[in-house]
Amino acid sequence: MASVAKEWREIPGRYNLEGTKCDCCGKVYFPERNFCPKCRRDSIGKMKIVKLCREGEVFSYSIVHDAPAANNSQKPYAVAFVKTKDDVLIAGQLVDVDLEKIEIGMPVRAVLRKLDADGAAGVIHYGFKFVPNV
Ligand SMILES: [Zn+2]
Image 1 (cartoon, rainbow, N blue to C red):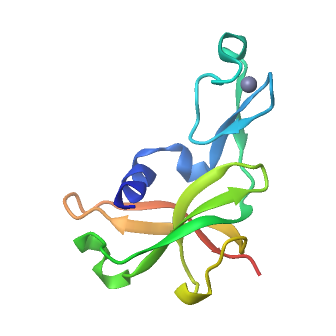
Image 2 (cartoon, rainbow, N blue to C red):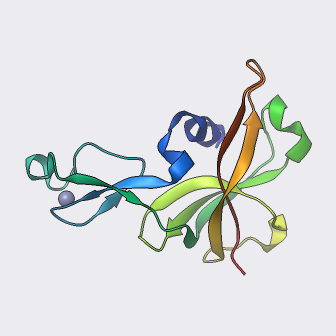
């Protein structure tokens, strides 16, 4: 699941939690796409940027024990696929939660948090993480 964290940092849309919606069939994609794989040519020029719902539930998750060196202070940690109320799957770290209490279907919401500092550049990234929605 290390690739999830990498992907997280590299996609600017994650700062605003925006996806694209196909104006033909209404499906929302995240990360953003230029066209809808279902509608293909019909969807070109009809993809609209939409803000994603920040509330959702845990669709699947895994506990990461073997974290990169930069994450030493916080391992193990949980990475989850969250299904938002727009029916979009977003991968992200689950924080502020007892790892043993995480379960499929648990309500969560996205919050803007400091992500890991980049070891090489010393750059601190901000992005969305998920916390229990109680
Ligand atoms: Zn479509």
